[in-house]
Image (cartoon, rainbow, N blue to C red; front, side, top):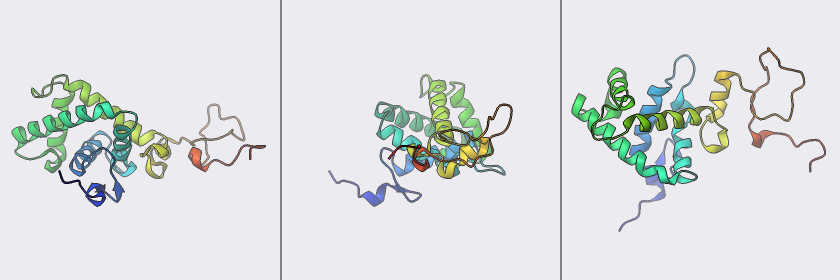
Amino acid sequence: MKMKSQSSRQYRGERLQALTVRQARFIDAIAGRILPATDAPGAVEAGAVFYIDRALAGPYPHLLSRYTRGLRALDKHAKRQFGASFEKLGDEQQDSALGDLESGKIAELPNGEAFFELLRTHVLEGVFGEPSYGGNKDMIGWKLVGFPGQQWGYPETYINKAVDLPPITWEGLPKKPGQS
């Protein structure tokens, strides 16, 4: 059996750990409909697909086959309904196919609504989670909601006020006083 080279598992400049390039493109297309870019960046720009890839390679390897089956069924449904692969459909057709998935109307995928919820949850985790887990690139999600990230404390009480601190990750935190 011939092994794929490392470069064949590159997607948007990053090495994939669990997903194939096609699966990554597919998940990006789905993420772009779940949280699309508007005047602000969306799930694609935040790199939600890379969070999902790392999660499937790390703490959730048991979900990889579920993703594989679910994506395959959604793509089959898109081809049957619209005559093209999901990622090649227009926004309205993708939304329609995802609506069918969310409401459990895809016959090839029993319990499709649970798969949709899993996808949606992982996309949102990839947008708003700690960037060290692979998503939330440049802290896009945190900036969208005004979350200041990991802080040791706040210089003032932020009760009923917006926190006006730039977000930082736990990796960017300065050492605690007295910590070496």
